[in-house]
Image (tube, rainbow, N blue to C red; front, side, top):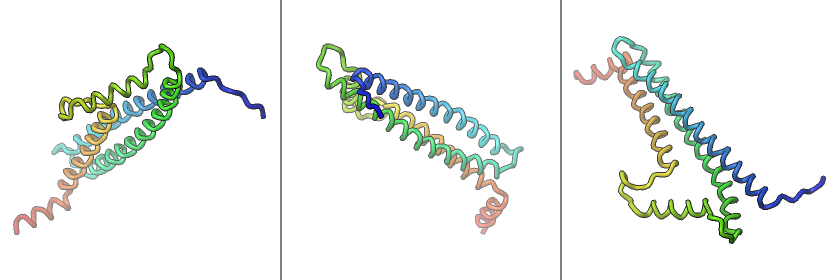
Length: 168
């Protein structure tokens, strides 16, 4: 088998294409999560209406929402890992080339670290995509837990038990 040498420019192009592919994939997965979770939340709220007493469906939707949130968090972790790998290659070439070209990835990393240490107050601090995505994933997981609890409470079997225990 014949070995071919890949030039630095080809490595850099490959790393950048890899970066773009996984960054776009991460955003697409997030969009799918928002769509799917919004539908599940709407369905869960519908099961809580007084004239719609299908609490088992609400329990099912809550459990599905929790599981979906968990798997999308794991998928996001994997995409972030793959993106970081391509960033490492790009930063390597940015460090190696001591010419007058600006170093985009190294500069961004330095500036982001500066912004993170600048202000630690929750509402005004710098948020990364990771922080924002994670907050949304956890919020929808909490919505699933709340839906699960509310629908469990309204189950005829459990609501009868809780009313009996309150009366005693």
